[in-house]
Image 1 (cartoon, rainbow, N blue to C red):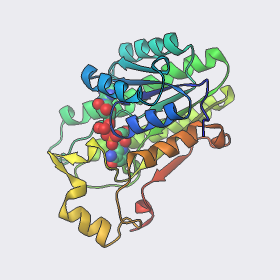
Image 2 (cartoon, rainbow, N blue to C red):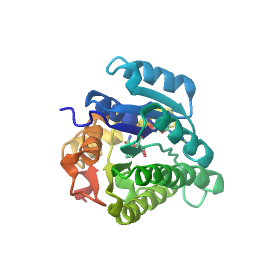
Image 3 (cartoon, rainbow, N blue to C red):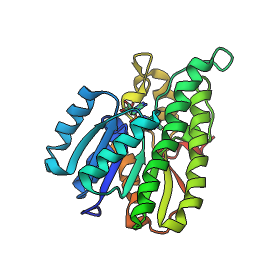
Image 4 (cartoon, rainbow, N blue to C red):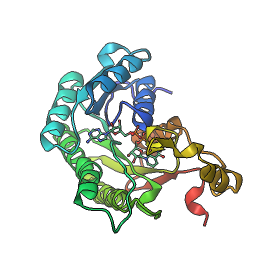
Length: 260
Ligand SMILES: NC(=O)c1ccc[n+]([C@@H]2O[C@H](COP(=O)([O-])OP(=O)(O)OC[C@H]3O[C@@H](n4cnc5c(N)ncnc54)[C@H](O)[C@@H]3O)[C@@H](O)[C@H]2O)c1
């Protein structure tokens, strides 16, 4: 399938994990792809890998922090300068940490909200303005989480920020529909990426994960997902195959969120 020939896509946090798998998916389907991230060395390494699958002129790394309005404006401008357009934005950048609600402070809450809630807002606004000016519509896909509507201990800041980004997605979907811009989200469950590492340990390799989620099938499909299994749903939502999907949040979690 090459659904994105002649299209340009910007993926935030696109150098690793789900973001990189998504960038690769779009590139393989013919899109020009810009990955945005803060770390030059990680970004350049991801770019080199992307260029093994797509021509150099269809790939770009833009260095910036999604929580900085100035960085977002510059990175969006650099992408438009390089590709002449942006047809799809994937709001994927995020950070997480583990902290008890009553012990957490602004130093834990603020960075998480800055990236997930404000970062998603800044990128959505900057790209939507370009799409409206261009007048050809577009698609915005947020990589949210089942944490947006399910609760686990020690991640109140992350869960609340993901909830905010889901509601921003719905509001943007309603406001931008008249411009032909569709806004949707995917809500991953446990996915095998760098974010699976908590305090240096891969939670997917722990005994408790294997016991509860795999052996007892708390995840009905009894396994974690791969980043490419999220990327394929992101690509679907960004494509014309999802032409009548607007304001939807699709779980990609092996069935985890429908069990109790
Ligand atoms: N891995 C999972 O189990 C899981 C589950 C649910 C949701 N998610 C979501 O998937 C998305 C991708 O995460 P991942 O699992 O691939 O982990 P990841 O850590 O590989 O990806 C996050 C990316 O965002 C980048 N990033 C962080 N802060 C940034 C900033 N201020 N500006 C620009 N880039 C920034 C990181 O450098 C990294 O490249 C995130 O939104 C995450 O919340 C992941």
